[in-house]
Length: 159
Image: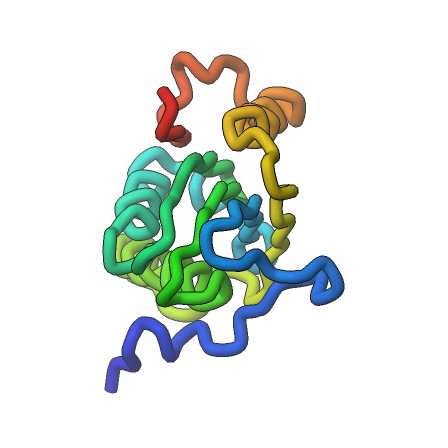
């Protein structure tokens, strides 16, 4: 019996409860990590499936995905939650849809993502473009990506 996608990820929560969660309309930098930091997205085709999953409109509900970067073992999302779904629900849905897509492609079962996620709400009035550039640049600084011009797994609404 197959569970509903959302039921697979009940209990997903932010790593740092004390930072606070964003309110509707407040942008937030979210980092999600694969279970055991497995580099599932080193494969081009697996990464494509993950992106298809988390970009589905049903995954984001009424949140806006402003920017994202998919790395071999984790993803960065700049999300702006809407009024209907709290950030925890949106992150759970995005992880669930991407997990289902990837698991189907790899013919595997079990959780793809760690149950927790990191969330850093942006200060009110903060420049969203600067924030998105910072986490895109982090991939360059980490050495995971040599040139974003040839790296296909990122996007930003301003580009």
